Length: 554
Picture 1 (cartoon, rainbow, N blue to C red):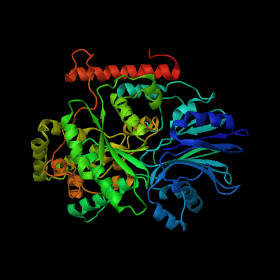
Picture 2: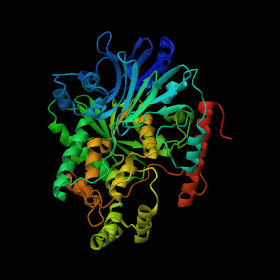
Picture 3: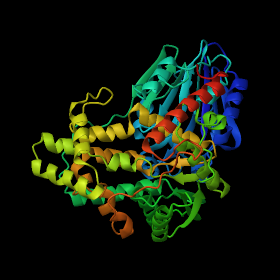
Picture 4: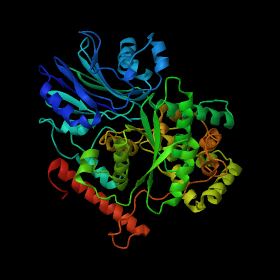
């Protein structure tokens, strides 16, 4: 990851002093010395990425001649060869490719960029500032409209360092936090600080701010004529490509390995992809496993996966982790929406960073995208009773899910209004959308990214590859499960790579990644876990108010 920030002043020169203040607040996101550029009325700043290979990194801010557009870019482009060919270039860094795309296609350039990215571009020819963010939202980008200027940055803390930015909690966002019902993509927990939505372009000029979505999911099923076996093979190709594109051409990378199907698939795909890369391979790939002293099942499964992938696995013991929403944690994450898992991951990030790793591949969102049951509702409404009965019995027998619970879930799918979800052709498509693109999931992505960035780690999420998500939108949801056993694209697509002990298990019995502390009264029961979660959330909000506004919650 890197960091970007900037100022657009409506009345004269942008303050370079304020620009360097913002860069200081983002210093954990980069290496070396920050880059800065200014020209009436804009100023752009950039921290160099920890993680991009040298030939892809480039010097930033980068501009096209003395009077051309200037760009800052935080991200990684995944389709470089195709983009180089389209732009008739032999070689270019990622930031050079992004600017070349703009010079070629103008305001439609963002549709040609594939990867995780956030960028800002000042075009003096049109006196406008453009901001854009990748469709999934893996790279963050925030902004604020002040009385005489517009400011933006990769993290809100850089914007809050500006003296003309109001420092106050956003009342509507705090109300949504109480209900745990988030319905607004743009708004943050800070009053007046907004986010660029994933898949959105902002144009800022003298007329104001123009917002335009450059990516939207396909809501209608596309006839593909594929059989399930062909779909599994296509998924395999896309998944290995997603993992490969998240590995560096050299240096080191780490994988968070639990021994479950999602992370094990990343491990074996990474090992396989290293053999396919023609531009070099990481000097070291290492796996990290989170363990409690009595987590032998987790240890055994992760060891099996690591041996199959040819990786060394380092345990990260969790028994000494203080599960408490500390001021440091609140400052790192910038949000009151915290979870004890954020403290657990912090120890993992510190261990990986101490070993020299800057890239960590994580299996988050595998469950969300590949283990949904909404396709059962599609079987019901289409009158496919036998297929429905076979699948629902399979979920009961293979995964131990009570039929009553599944029927309750299906009633929710069929009857509850979907106010925040576009109208899709199938319930399975709705589930994929809600796994990634609703505000609560965006908050989770940003929280994961910021927590890692605070320790100099770039989190990379193969399951959130846009090519993979778009593929899942296009295939029947029932292909994800067979006799109630989900994640069939992984099980069958990677059958030759995965250990049988892992691919054959219906679902891993996870060792919890956090536990109610022994100091909590009568810990261990389900009700006490809910009580502890409630107490944690209340303390997280109180600490958040204290850190950012100098006062606890009322």
